[in-house]
Image (tube, rainbow, N blue to C red):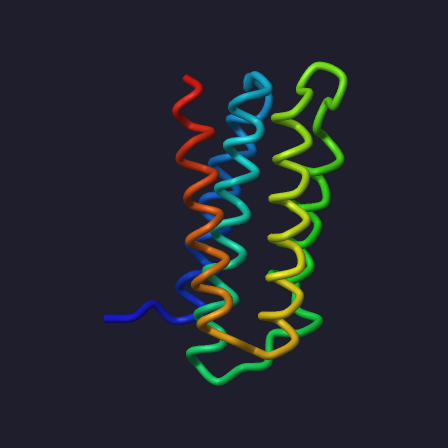
Length: 129
């Protein structure tokens, strides 16, 4: 059974409340992991909204996803990260473009493609542990 937008939103809220308690003691790797979790939730909510026939432009999940991608990009340390930081910056910018295109077109397929990319980067990031 497919999740409804309200179910996904409620799950996201519950996760955010859990995450808020984890943030205080988190190290930088865990903080980025939390951002990936939030990004996946926001894009998942957008996908559920599209499946329910809702327009997703100018919605909280769309703004949240974009803000997270901007924050991830802005938080990169190019001096210490070198080529890896530069590559991640390109990835985050590409994800922002895909997000903007999917939101503008109200495209479930575009959001699914974006979510797949986010999950790939998130999985790689989690392997740093």
